[in-house]
Image (cartoon, rainbow, N blue to C red):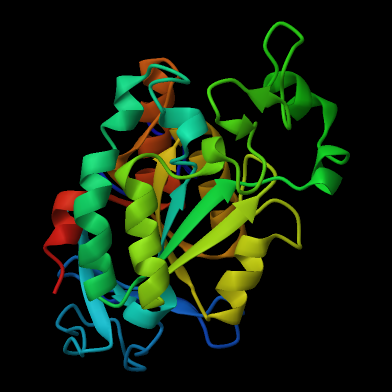
Length: 293
């Protein structure tokens, strides 16, 4: 006999669709509201409340407008977002983590081609592209916790701010070559920067949303962004840390699975994907993003 109070929580990807239209949150909530429909649509655009008598399975979602776009996600669902309130957050696709002269890890390089296809499609859909990267200042070298300092050293040598051989500059300092985006991604960013669609945002911790004064959080608030698509490396470190912080802050979170990777053992990546879809939000891939209208 199952426990009397064994209420199912999380496990969102495996759940069947709702049987009646539901609304979560409210206008009084600082994070607004979502609506979910038996069709499998989850509307996070915060643009249309359900009718007051909404316990009817026949309630249908409002028609799609030009201001909105539907993103297919895992679990036989579709997430409806507001274009100008949505951003793609691409984390740490930098030379330090990807360039073959600095390290060898093919899973991370596999993210490059999917991003090169998805980023232009997202721009065309009116979605901002945020390149969130390590970019330290001299002052920040003095304020990074010892745990992080130790983690980025090798056998007690090098670390943040140390000179990297081969003309790559100082490790993860702003404007150093090792801090630039890898290969074609740097040119793709510059193209978007010139068009006013792409933005470079520096971070100084694993999470781009660490603390209450991060550049990323300020940008999101100032631009009215509420929905975030996540990609980059490493999945279970900087990407996962930023995604979880975003979830805690009330942002809508969508992980782009094939544009995310890690150097950790296989279970590390699987755990991030599992939690992203079953706890923190949703999971999609670049194939579905390229098809957006």
